[in-house]
Image (tube, rainbow, N blue to C red):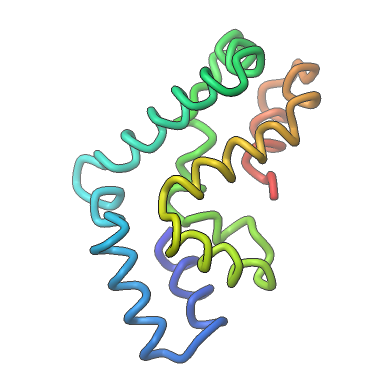
Amino acid sequence: GMNFIVAQLLMHCSETFAFSLFVSLITECNMQEIYGPQLRGLFMHSSLIEVLLQANLPELHTRMLSLNLRANIYTSEWIFGLFASVIPCEHMGAFFDNFFEHQWSFFYQLVLTLLKRHENEIKHEEDMYNLLRSIKAAS
């Protein structure tokens, strides 16, 4: 989680600026709630993604529910690491630009975009393991 974020920040700017950006992530973007003892932020973001999926991609949401595939199962890694473990390094600068500007609304939109991009796979995949691997590796 955090180690991927810090590594990506260090790839794109100086140590001092990376530290400043990381502090901003923790304080202004409420990342501390994600890593807190009860993981409240993680569950809050997963729940919001579930609601957004249901509202924006209802057929996909129904299909995922039929497979007992809730958002917290496939979004945890994305939330903990802000996609830093799946987005190629050369695109993380653009991700951080958008995230710092729009914060979590950008993150949610990216999740919906990725799920929409993989909608056909998700609707037709019968093997839960393959489906989960495909979704989590989405980029």
